[in-house]
Image (cartoon, rainbow, N blue to C red; front, side, top):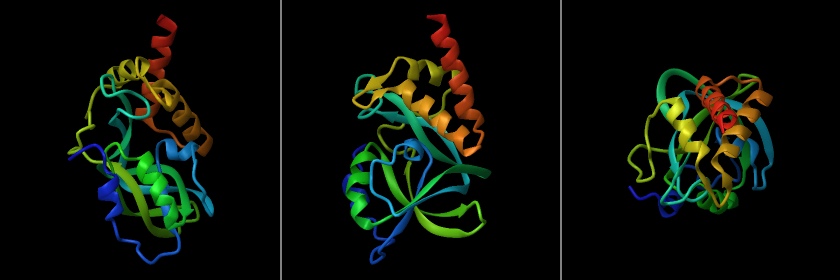
Length: 190
């Protein structure tokens, strides 16, 4: 599948006719809501885990030197914490462009801290997209992040902001925090 997913996402019709839809953010959408929303609430999804396995050719890297950003990987029993936004369908044009590098809009069930549940949307980069980088050790991921930058800035800033946002939510993520530790050691070694 091509990395540019705008046209594919425009065909997603699961919520046609809805005046508002919940969107689950688990990466930069936690801390960078550059779109209008009606409501914002901490939320989680089950059966998925966050991983730095997606390449970023358009925001945190370049086509010749891609950065790494998060996607979701199915994992039984996993819980992924993030932020949910109640948005109107007009916001999809912006989000489809922002998430165009391999991410598909998918329907998902999410839970809020009060235990209520709702059907909403999430953008996930599946392994069959051309920008997908796949698994690597946290140390290897940190090395790639340390040397990557793109139009949206250094890849390291993405990792740091995400780790900070998760701490503000009171949520631990071993994968993210271990990459952050390796990145800190790389910074000290320079």
